[in-house]
Length: 94
Image (cartoon, rainbow, N blue to C red; front, side, top):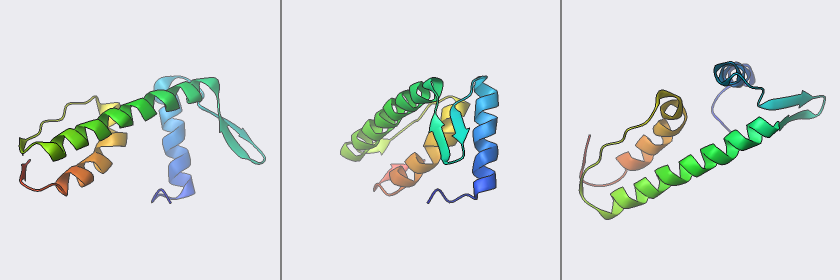
């Protein structure tokens, strides 16, 4: 579903936790759940994705050049999907 193997995803999640200096997931025998910090990050990222989605809508409505600025952490998670979606728009210059 995510296009990565379980070990790769586990490493990425551990790296994110290390980068942020916080546990984001509670692991148990049945799987995992978000910690309070994880839920907070999820809400923030969900809001950020909404902003990217709004930018996509604005770009679709107006012709011309589009510039995107972001921090590295968000770029790794949000830009690949956004770039694919934006590339489908007609008459865009990258």
